[in-house]
Image 1 (cartoon, rainbow, N blue to C red):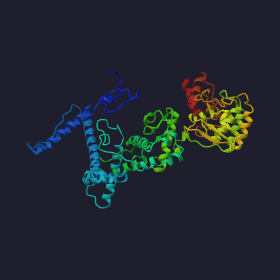
Image 2 (cartoon, rainbow, N blue to C red; image 1 turned 135 degrees about the vertical axis):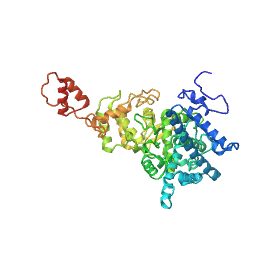
Image 3 (cartoon, one colour; image 1 turned 90 degrees about the vertical axis):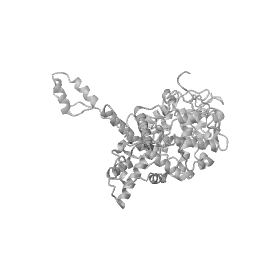
Image 4 (spheres, rainbow, N blue to C red; image 1 turned 90 degrees about the horizontal axis):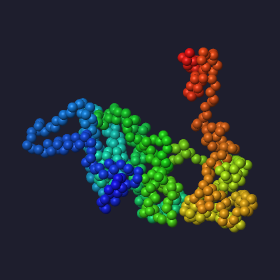
Length: 525
């Protein structure tokens, strides 16, 4: 069988791998394939458990001695064993709490209290002072619950421990989401939020399946709103644990703790936080949505643009039910706002009087801007308009885009404003050479007969010509990226050698202090 390993040979497994997973080690290795530290820990633990039930030995003889040739290996093994015991203790407490409750389940706001009750730790195992009583003991237990909450939620992350999978990966724990059935059965929410046609046409069972996969992916990536995973609260947890708890419940530095991430419905960019999750059309979830058996077939395969719209629609529809929180203001790099009437008028004026941009005359660009503003059509919809698509003599006048070019994947008819109609009549007088089926704005390569044009560049240059709306205006730059003043070298005494090297160095480092330049000149002498 040729590498890479693409799917499991067991027909009951139904596991397949895509081209991104090129390494076969993670596909074919089992839990038994582990390192030296894990193997030593498992062997030591198994030996100790057998010694406890061996009645032929005296209690003092039930010991395990280990020898090593250097202190570094001994320290590593001791840390690994302590970590194994800590993880096992937390998971056993969670499992015991779930067994006690049975099929009723456990709510997230009651999780820590039930786990603490299941562990039933005596005070000398966690308190810095085991003789505490009254309010002091209650404050110490509160600090313990904060640490337990952090450990429990941190263990939700999938793949964090390869050789010791969590309870969910072992099939001992299942998660349910509140209101997920209500979202799937409420058809009005998908229509009110103007969701993608594939989501609107999907059955409640398909919608529930997609929502569950998305929420599971966010939870396993720790893109959740939880105080114990927030850096601000983690500093408080660290401080309380240092004051009231003993090892191994002490959090020395909050910066070493795992933080919750933020889910972005876009591609990952430079300098992105490592804990953030970017759900783009090319991500695993985007590829999952484009599978033929996930969403209903609308006549053609979902494109990347359709997948991006579906992902955003999912977040928007989950927000009213409290299953997701959408805040576009957090990402300042993609802060969008609507143009004011004065700014839009300047944009139209700039386009009409401007030169051709990307082989598109100024009046044509102005007409595209007006139609896009009044109808909401996107680039592909505007690029598919013909004279036959416009019914200016009807009451009311309308413009129609075919389902293949509409963002809703259905025939989209919009009523035109009288001002837009008047502009269209005047503009069409200059296009008498066009036939009824010829494209009015051939700017989209996805429309037969059209050519792909950079419409973003058109608007950017039109904005730069009349106003400072663009972020990279050539005259007045954005306040978030101010332009540095031009460096002027200070007046210096004439050195023995030309100061070209010093001048270039100062320009590169942007040093404008005369004493620094003078010192450099002296060194060159």
